[in-house]
Length: 178
Ligand code: GDP
Ligand code: MG
Image (tube, rainbow, N blue to C red; front, side, top):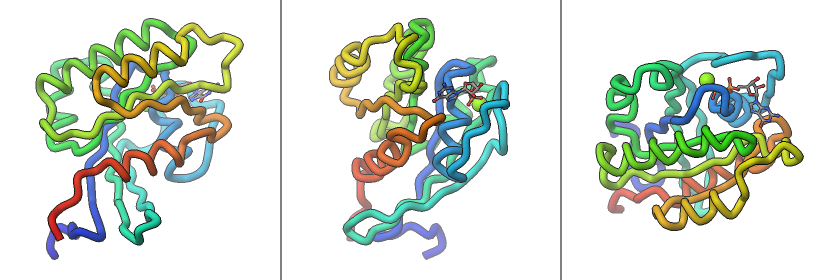
């Protein structure tokens, strides 16, 4: 069909939200290109990338990933950014309690203004920096549980749990009727 959307092949808009520097762009680049560039300071790469994954039940999900820096600086632009998104990935850095607070702000914002059936994932990134950890795993787990979200800790640097994050999101997407 025209939209490329049927019961077996989903196409979804995915946005990333969270403080600047938590690793949103690195997560996307790791997922889409299998790369990590430690020299990149702030937002790297294109602001729009897509990646298709196949699930075990032979359905495919094409993620159209929106990764912009604008929402970090201008909260007023955020609604334009997440409008129509089927998935919101809200990222914090496990070494930064401030970024965890900001993640909670985004959860509330999406609960108020996002699509009612949006799939939200809470991601604690930089899990490789465990010796500098300042947000307990349990804090992420509990907050996500209370808010009906999926929670995972990732490392864009080591690739730990990056594919798992997107696979889990894909499984949770509402399916169009067959
Ligand atoms: P964004 O502003 O949220 O898009 O963050 P970036 O993806 O640009 O990453 C910000 C900084 O964090 C960069 O210096 C990255 O190299 C670093 N970074 C991103 N992900 C990880 C990670 O999983 N582990 C570590 N140790 N550093 C990371
Ligand atoms: Mg970025």
